[in-house]
Image (cartoon, rainbow, N blue to C red):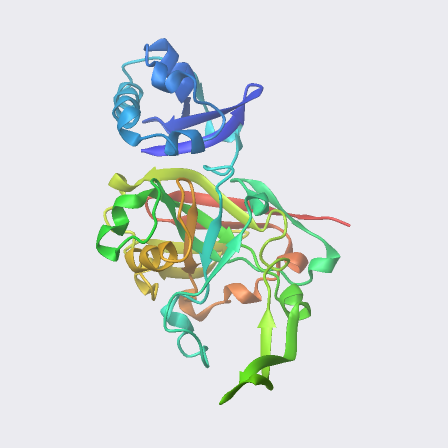
Length: 327
């Protein structure tokens, strides 16, 4: 099932896709069919995900079946007539994997033997057909097309063998990045360590460190959506085609099979350090392989080019973002 959070006819709503590609208002449809467990949920999918699935998922499947088969009229909206929100509007965190694509192997001079993660705030998110707001101070900004897994139940110290049971579904993430701000926020400094053999003394070690507070987490730097597709519709999240285009020109074509760390081990690793909550986003890393040796995503400077960038992932749909230059 494809689920969405959106604004239409004066208010925020949640919905599902019907057989004709329209978005059906879940609360209105549930009210008309006497399903009180769904009739009061509106505006964001997070309250549903935070509730025990057994209490609402069977009813939602029944409701979807009615409207998917054309047996019932409904309050439907054309996808072109709605304002799309991120499917989960306020997750507790967006966990993003760094350099998690086998295309990076020759570029990594040194690095960890485990997943590397950074966390973005929900305030960085925008929905499908939203604007990427770029200011002159942002410098160069490029897209990063990624598959997202959305957590459906609390996960703490979860084994990889049990991890997929905690995944509710999947969506698309464009993890916009500013190499300019990354360079500006990188320190080359002498880190202090305890001296070998004498913990009372210190030694200085040359190192580099950068923090993603600006170059990854600025407002609108995470486009997410349009749909949250339930896990039962995606047979294998590691066999999905990923394509990224700028103004209709294909710039990246990849497959999630090339993700280095796969989702079960990522959940195992993350949940051993931080509790994953319902609605949390795990963005699995950037699709990087170029189509026909064409332009790499890092060369697509949206600050200079403007236009529109789109990410398509098989089974999940297409996420589009327009560039808005601000003073």
